[in-house]
Image (cartoon, rainbow, N blue to C red; front, side, top):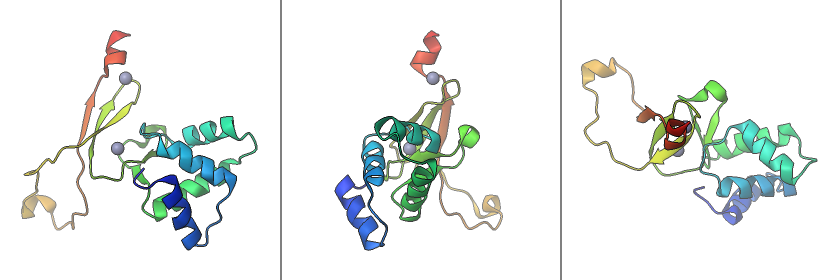
Length: 141
Ligand SMILES: [Zn+2]
Ligand SMILES: [Zn+2]
């Protein structure tokens, strides 16, 4: 995550969002998860620590983190549900087409720019490169 758990708690308080034990657990799990988990995976993980947590709480907390800009969604790989990205730095991805592992690549693809004709009048807001492949584990099986 871009922010530590303490900073996230402070941020939520500033926005008058309640800090519940469940939310604290969600923050802690996200802080150490760079696998780009889906909301359901995050929910399952919280559930294993806090059996009384509701799906709604987890989904709402994720939505709030996205709204605050603390979490981003990976838009082009949502065949198995929206995946959340805890890496706040600009980066690209390496994706395993078999097991759907998603790894961050920090690299500046300078020079990948569109000409005015190619943008076709679009206002470009961001660009992102994804490499598709088969990870070492999947190559072995
Ligand atoms: Zn794989
Ligand atoms: Zn990422």
